[in-house]
Amino acid sequence: MSNKVNKPIKFRVVTALAASIVTLSLSGQAPSPRPNLVVGVMIDGLSMEYLQLLQGYFGEGGFKRLMNEGVTITDLDYGTTVDAPTATAIAFTGAVPAVNGVGSSVVYDSESRLTNGVFHDPTKLGNFTDETVSPAALLVSTIGDELRIDTGGLGYVYALSPDQATSLILGGHAGNSACWINDVTGNWATTTFYHDTPRLVAARNRMQPLSVRLDTIAWTNLMSVDKYPDLPSYKTAYPMRNTFLRKDVGRFKAFKASAPVNAEITAMATEYLKTLNLGSRNEFDMLNLSYTVQPYDYTSDADGRLEQMDLYLRLDRDLANLFSAIDAGPGMNRTLVFVAGTPRRTRTRRDDEKWAIPHGEFSPRRAMALLNVYLIAKHGNGEWINGYHDRQIFLNHELIKRNSLDESDVRRDVAQFLTRMSGITEAYTIEDIINLKAGVNPQAVRNNTVIEKAGDVFITVAPGWQITDQGSDFTLPMVERSGVTTSPAFLLAPTLEAKTISTPVDARVLAPTVSGILRIRSPNGASMPALKL
Image (cartoon, rainbow, N blue to C red; front, side, top):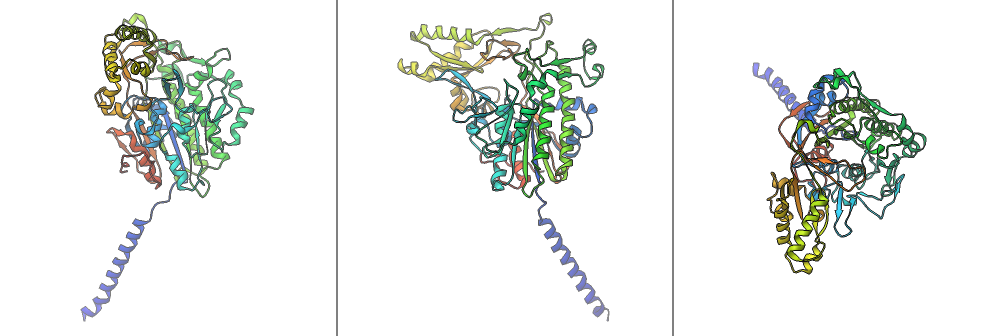
């Protein structure tokens, strides 16, 4: 009797359980919707130490929102000290410079003996600039390129940056446009390589030209000087004031290194979001931006800590304004934001003489003259050195060949001679790099060297020594100091839970990780697996 009563009950229970299992299985297979908007942000010089120092001074909507709600990577590792365009290329392609082709923002042409921007391209014209550039030197695809391909070109990809080279990387090959601020005119500029520059760019140049506004812009401390942490008492008596007056020839370069430029980027970004309805269409769009918190080198005081901290505090507000604009548009619940820093460089100013820190001056021009005299004495008359650029010596290969000399032997001889010069602690050849015998981290040095554009011999200048006669207009003398190779990064999306990754993460994983969240292909040069988040 009881068996007859229990049988249908057992059947119903089993059926219900089976249905539940099927439902759970199906719900587990259903993918979450892709974001409508992707916002990629590169911050030049971002330091986790400064974020921690100033965390109590930040508002709730900027850096704190990233740190409290997103995935925090405390150390995104670029392998060696790299400049902002090089780091940006690594982050957006998932490939090292040896693969992606961008090892420096400026490259030296040994034949013409001239330097050019890495993206110099005389076949393209400039819009609102006389610069002739294109992203052709970037040899692989970017996250933005893959997004455009995935959407059949219906998804928009736009880029804004103070810097030309960084902007072209952020825009990629397939992007709609990439804009930057011209060093000479202050115009928002782009290249004819791109065919979809928003009208608002021309409107801003015409109606709100930076060349006019810059006379009225002054960068002062955001709060009372005595409230900034870790400042010596003598600094708390002097508020800062940095201006960009018309009489200063390099004022646009100074502006592009200051806190006000971040506000300019944010203002343009919010206009893009509103005017172009980014993230509010059927296809998902991408907006890539670049900011700076690098030490400000255009002050009269060698101690730039006040400007440094103010850069962070003002950028925190700019990020909050950017996120508010996203909230008001497609919504942060439909947006993926990823933020990556580039390694912080040290200030280029030398400490005051009164501190008696050992120092010296290294003149590349004088060093090359001495080197050429040495080679003449050993191999005969001739101009044995084609040039010097960025701690690299370029030899005259034609003259070496004409004298039936072995290039590798000459390079090795040059390296040995250079190590005997005052101010040079190490010299290594291109063969040393290829054979993983250069630097503290030989593999990283090899990864971050574009062999086709590299010099014959590389030098390391002693810490504290100032490198003079760089040979570029408005270029500040450089003081050597050991640099960092890491910077923090953040990922913020509705599908990601807040967590902190405190172990170093190879910078090449960022691109495949972002691509994985978007469910698109990784850039074609990416070789690292995505982070498991």
